[in-house]
Amino acid sequence: MKYLILIYSNPESRAIWDTVSPEDKAAGLGVYEQLDKDLVESGEMIVSEPLDDPAKAKRVRVTEGRALTTDGPFAEVKEYLVGFYLVDCSTVERAVEIAGRIPEAELGLIEVRPVTDLAALA
Image (cartoon, rainbow, N blue to C red; front, side):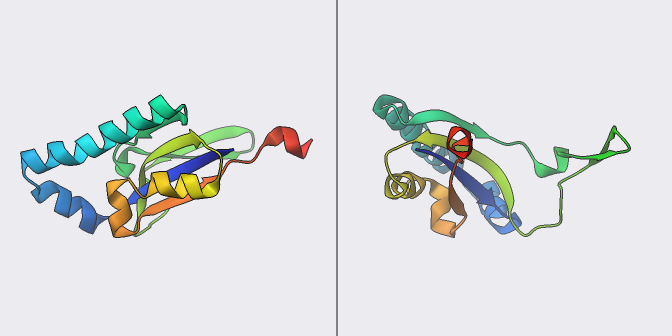
């Protein structure tokens, strides 16, 4: 089953990251590198990507058949999406175990969601 593991951040956690020493930042990024390596080796990794600053987002709305855009994130939020993993693993418990290895999990900012199997809906 596929699971999307959503990684969230907030201004407070970003401020902490900005004060971390270069050595500690390298160690933190190393956690992601190891997790990526382990998931590739286990065959569970589909894709993982960090997302850019939410201020660079575009909001898209279709009105009268035309796509209209505005700058910035979709909504005012206290937490914003900063990255994700799409994994294929046997159980939700395994997906939660993977999510628990993500450093932001210590801040309570990880969400695990099953991906709907469209073939099963037909």
